[in-house]
Amino acid sequence: MPLLIVLAGIIVLLILIMGLRFNAFIALVIVALGVGIAEGMEITQVVDSIQKGVGSTLGYLALILGFGAMLGSLIAESGAAQGITNKLVDKFGIGNIQWAVIITGFIVGIPMFYSVGFIMLIPIIFAIAQSTGLSLLYIGIPMVASLSVTHGFLPPHPAPTAIAVIYDADISLTLLYGLILAVPTIIIAGPIFGSTLKNIKTKPPKDLFPIKEIAPEDMPPFGISVLTGLIPVILMAMAALAKLNLPEDATVYKILSFIGNPVIALLLAVLIAIYTLGLRMGKDMKSIMATLTDSVKSIAMILLIIGAGGAFKQVLIDSGVGDYIVELMDGSTISPLVLAWSIAAALRISLGSATVAAITAGGIVAPLIGTQPINVELLVLATGAGSLTFSNVNDTGFWLFKEYFNLTIMETFRSWTMMETIVSFVGLAGCLLLDMVIS
Image (cartoon, rainbow, N blue to C red):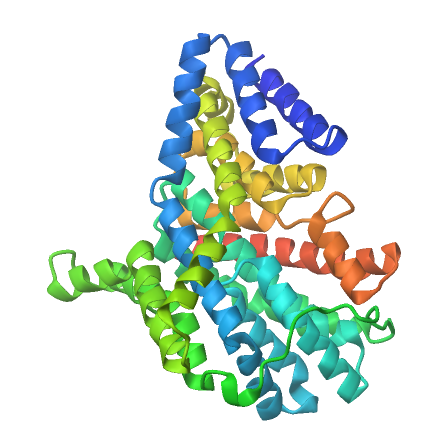
């Protein structure tokens, strides 16, 4: 009975978001209320549970996403993203153009939200295609694969960061394992799969881009741009390696753990970027602060959706559904990694939003943690991988890709949807293999 109520809640969630076009935040709160009451909780207890879930989920997550948005905006506004792309394309040449856009997508994708990175880089992809005569998809798919992998696997992106909080996973270790998975996943979903799309010839719509080109002399230097964008990754990876190799009472361990804390790492990156990508390039502090303020506005709804997902998770726990799931899975031979991936995949196909699918799946799977041996960092990655499965017509990313690349529906399924699904399955396979090695 408890699971039937949860299933009914998910169906209502689908109806609200897909059928009635409700905002995901409002829909999640309504479903959390309904499931809690249906499970027998007192009304006041349900409200307290929702408040507790929002607070515990957002906690320091708001700081991480806020600083991440600020860093991404500074990279975009300064021309650093454009400069990185131009330099890599020049260095790699036409013969290795796919590797140039992969590295660009990876560097730019780590500090930027997916949609921002896509909008920033897509004009450059089209310019490369026009100058080389190569297929748009042959060049574009590797770049989009990089952006998608960073979006689904790597903190400080919203979904993996939020799931790490729900599972109480170490974000630095999640990043380290995510980086290990990212390389083969991007290669398979990017250049290998992209090479099969050479025959799909399309042209971008005319007058598509309002984005202004930044003159080379006004861009920050290549090395500074790359280093500034990767500062959080470097610091968090150092902290993860310290946790794996150093005793906790060592001074070096304490220092690296502090500067590698996601909040501190991103704060340091933002402070450095204010100088390297702002003041150093002749911008005044007032305009820099205005950029940072605007960047935070863009993540307000993302934070609310993540908070509502945390509320749903808390209701499942407080109502006793979590204990029921634990009892149901007792003695089961199903890998928790496969289970988390499957739930996230089903929700992704149904809901469209990868972030909502990941957060909702996290709430359902979280009660299993502590009841059996599970590497929670890999559980984060498996859930994130599942949330990327089979993007289709209910996903805004599907239409964004279709319209910018000027594709038919079938061509979008053949390219974008297939690429996302490859990322998802390769990510799951990588989690299972890593689990064998780590365990």
